[in-house]
Image 1 (cartoon, rainbow, N blue to C red):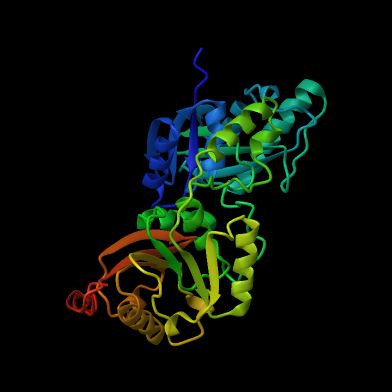
Image 2: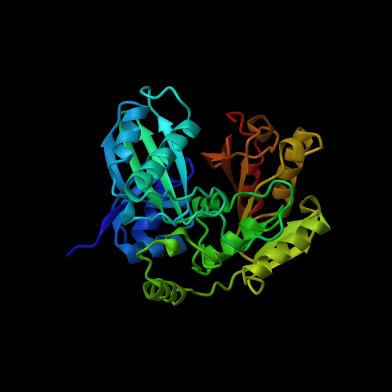
Length: 392
């Protein structure tokens, strides 16, 4: 009997194709990208594997029911028809997450969560004279209700906490980059561990850690303490450890340098703590260096990837700051491929270099561009770089 079932992996805007590729490489079947999500087929073991290994997924959802829905009372009635004891019991704590994109519903997502919670509680109260409790902080089971136009999908969240919570980050700076975003940017850059890698404004080290895990094929969530599926009735611990072991056997060693710079000693300390916590200190070096006073000291092709500070984090002249980025790259980093993310599109004009690629991404709610500059080694070729891209 085929034990495969359909699942949905959610992701960030712009990462759908990256996630689809990751899923195919892991062995998923019937992979179909959508908006901020990718659906696929696999068995229970693959669900465990997806949670442990995927870099650009936020959650792995297991749909249990899909139905047409007309309004709030219709939703309540149809949720009451699900045999909830297949998934939980009266002693199970639960939480509900809801997303609503439908003209049929005039209420907000929070109200739909409450209505869904009432339906499940009333189902158990009517049948067993006792109801399970809601626990928003640490539930035994997380349920997702997604209403799109006339249809509602009800899913179990196999991940528990969002998969960006890798388990390695103990220390952060003011606005640390999300781990899924960091991994996605590294993958978008094409970096695979076959050249040197530098994050010249590394903050608490998230981009460096994600890059090192990609370079060495280390599963993204190997440091996680727990996944949602571990509290499910059908959790198979032996299968879980078999899957984990098979992924660990595929770890390789990259012999190129991975380095981070930051001008703040406190950031360097935080990055070093996080890197050690991720068991990656043998692969990554972090140095107290001001990027604007630096130059490339490693031999051969190098990828630079960074998230410059912006907005409230940047209490300086923005135009001058971005001009200094361009000048430093121009004079100090030949034979390098440079990528950085920014939400300040005006400031890009002041870098003074021509972009070779621009990709639309989001950082939270901020619309951003992920831009690439190619810094050539020879003086003739280098001159080609010294032009402002007026199209920015």
